[in-house]
Amino acid sequence: MKNNDYNNNINTIPVVSYLNADKYKSIVYKENKNKSGIYRWNNLITSKSYIGSSISLGNRFSNYYSLAYLKRRVEKGSSIIYNSILKHGYNNFSLDILEYCEPSILIEREQFYLDKFKPEYNILKVAGSLYGFKQRIDSIERTRIANIGRKHNEATKSKLSANSLAHPIIATNNKTGEIKLFTSIRQTAIFIGINHSYISKCLATKKFYIGKGYYITKNLYNNNSKNF
Image 1 (cartoon, rainbow, N blue to C red):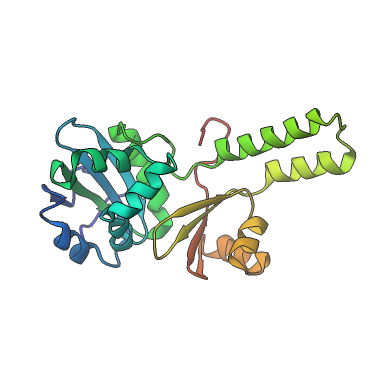
Image 2: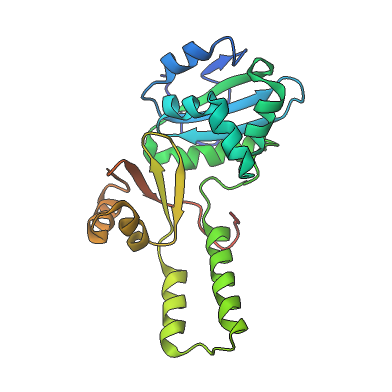
């Protein structure tokens, strides 16, 4: 693992580069098992790239190397990079490990590289952002209420206000690396099946919670200037 200077002057030369993602598949698995960090897929034909992060790079790459998984995700319209890999093949991609880092700063470091390289395949330009997602949910709910001609009573207004002030949460699956976004700690706790006060305590003291198969942290990039 390379020692990193966690500031914006960090050297952006990859820690490891696999020049042929197909040829070095087994090495990618072996060298990234149980590691957390930031990766970049590079299309050798189009020169376009994708940057992502995972607290379990080995598991994350097992998804990338599963054609069945990629096809399922593409059918749901969830990823440009998956579609590109299916179209061009692994042998036309290189894979970089931009940085190995602790899970607690993973989203922060991913954002640094997104800002630095502006990868074309990344639809979302804010790492782990929840703001736009929450904005859409609020918009749908307000439209529903308006359509049925129902006025907001004081209880409804309070609920909407509380939701807007709730702490946005990122929950990353320890096994697959999949990220789920929640509008509050309570909502997260219900999903993973644990008391919300315990998660709150962990986030207040350690800045993260690990358990029930998930790594939980607050969204570091939730503010009114960033969209999901």
